Length: 253
Ligand SMILES: Cc1cc2nc3c(=O)[nH]c(=O)nc-3n(C[C@H](O)[C@H](O)[C@H](O)COP(=O)(O)O)c2cc1C
Image (tube, rainbow, N blue to C red; front, side):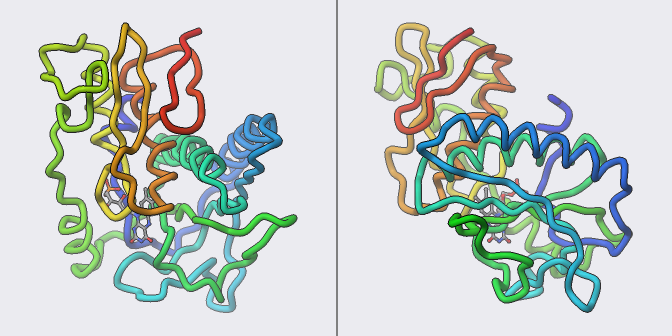
């Protein structure tokens, strides 16, 4: 899992090579487990669903602008109402699936904005609206230059671990926190993030970790909160469970 955290990078071009049935089965099983976990929270309905090729050209969804990502042959759709907690849960569980895909040798990309909704298989499911998709599949033998450029340009990373942490709610230095906390922050910095802002801040107060987004600007950043919480938990090797929402505390097992 640590390797998957380090190796993952958004894949912005896909090959027509189909995903093998055994890998699709493993993904479907993991999606079922995620849906079962999310179903426990009846107040914040959210659902993940795998979709394969269904369009005439053999793909599953087109992009509004083909230079960003695509075409895409498989994607996982995240359905929810307009609910920050449901979006956060989709971020947390969806990122588990992204890391599983990485372990299966598949590339992925979270896509909230740039897809063409007219080409989706479904935009609504049992009263829940499609909020985001995660593309899945193999990289082509050579990534087109345009997408390679976007990949490196968009991925510019300027944040340092100390900029995404506080101690007792106040700015602090890395030397003020234990090594496991720093490992958590390092894993967060490796994660995908909408509009490349990484808005999540982790606080350490009396040995307890909590996560929030003091400068949240966009609803799409609710996904970032869930993604970052998962990365922190895995990087710091914590056993237990996050409270959803802000500030959400990690409750140790
Ligand atoms: C919630 C979320 C939404 C995203 N939406 C889009 C999108 O609409 N189009 C796109 O090309 N990339 C999208 N991305 C991918 C980000 O651009 C990418 O994660 C970021 O640039 C960091 O690069 P990396 O994933 O390679 O580390 C999204 C990422 C996240 C987490």
